[in-house]
Length: 71
Image (cartoon, rainbow, N blue to C red):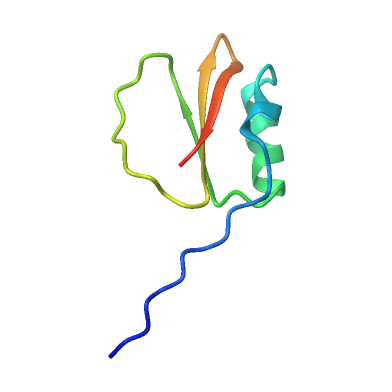
């Protein structure tokens, strides 16, 4: 029987630290801190709700991160 896969570890980083940053800087910092996927979305974007380890989501309004969350 195959072993149960272990999900990749997420960076020990608070999404709240990105709120207020310009989107380009926030994305660069997130990648430097180890996030494998960084997704920038406009306010009210329709997205799927699946959780992906290692992904950081940004809601970007007027070029700045208004909200950030894992998954």
